[in-house]
Image (spheres, rainbow, N blue to C red):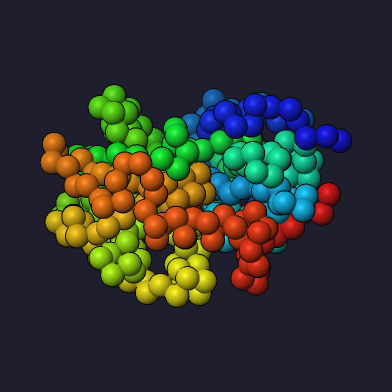
Length: 344
Ligand code: PLP
Ligand code: COI
């Protein structure tokens, strides 16, 4: 057993096939015991529910190699619970939280050589996914499902790592009020693809979505929640009137880190687009994004520039970033239950 030799500093955020995956199937009203398997391919009916009515949800978390050589994951129980919530909303069977955490452990252990070295800038991305394999032709939930977890080593989500990015205010909506924006379902991403391709063509790294009902409040981006730092150095976290923001585990962790490790005040509130110019720093946060600084927002040609600028992460986000990643990589003592060690 030896860590794979990849160009870790330059792998980017894309799929690299690893050795093993976990697969469990739901049939006759129950999940089977699941197993670690070799086959990365899925064979299913042309009439599988996922292909027609998009009955699918997924998760994203990471495994890290620590300085002292351990392999750990970050709050996998929260991903398990969020998948339970996503499944419930989509009329899918729930995969039990303890079995999810065990499966994460098993699949990371089976691919231990793929966990990037400490300090390389890369991590092992863990992608649990659940989808309807059973036949449906009328619109209804299927009665057979697959739950699968695969892993793939990744580098930074945005090119340039922690260099500030430029984002645009989107003319498209991500999620309807009281729709599915608060669950991690593939359907929320399908409709964002046209918008992200356009944004990239225009030179922007991401889309900021406003609340769909009034187009006046900040909600989130296509793949990450948003945080701001106000003029007093406190953290401001946008809330949604219509529950259409994904409950990011990174964002919830940042709120705790800000309050308990850094002594910052945190204001979780509705944030209007028209007040954003008052903030000093802006960041995107998520498993993939970690904390990615935003240098400016382009609002239909008008630039909203943050004091932190386009060269570096601002000072408050930098402290949050160092503390959060310090906890994740084992350099700092974690709050109880945050770090889940995988015994190799
Ligand atoms: N918002 C969206 C739309 C996302 O896709 C993600 C990624 O998971 C997040 C927020 C961040 O969530 P988390 O911190 O749990 O990864
Ligand atoms: C994650 O951060 O885990 C996500 O699922 C976001 C996705 C855009 C890669």
